Image 1 (cartoon, rainbow, N blue to C red):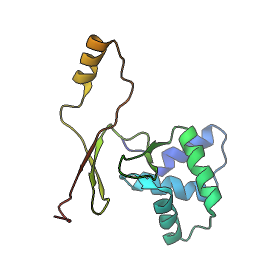
Image 2 (tube, rainbow, N blue to C red):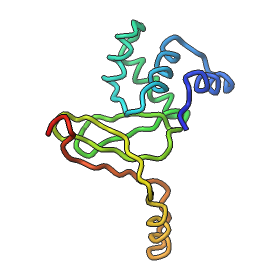
Image 3 (cartoon, rainbow, N blue to C red):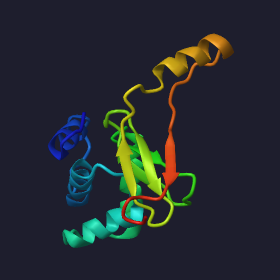
Image 4 (cartoon, one colour):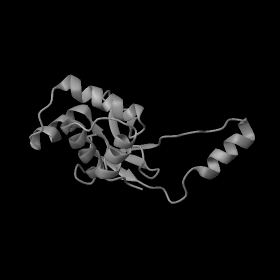
Length: 142
C-alpha cells in the first residue's frame, strides 16, 4: 500500500514533529515516486519544485524520515550510492539496468515466503527481511 504525502505528514504531526516546507516537499516527492531515489535525485526534484534547501538539511531530513520508519534505505550491489523509498510500499524487488542504471520495481507472483519457511525449518534461521535484485540490460539499452 502506498502512502500519500498527507498521511505521512499527518502521522508525523500526530507524533509532535514540526511540518517544515522542506519536510512537506520531501514527503510529497516520496509519495509520488515509486522508484528508489538517491539523495542527489531527491535534491534535483526539490530544485525543480523551487523548494529552498541546503544539502545538509536534506541529509538530516532523510535520516529523520528513515528513523521514523517513513522511508527505507536501499543500496544496490552495483552502486555506491544509497537510495530511499517509502517503507510502506508492498514488498517488491528490483530490475537494475547495468548500462543506464534504470531501476524498475517487480513483484514476484510466488514471493519467497515458502523459501523463507524452508530456511527456518532446515537451517533454524528466521528470515526477517530480504532484498532481491535482477541485474541486466533494459529494453531501452538493448
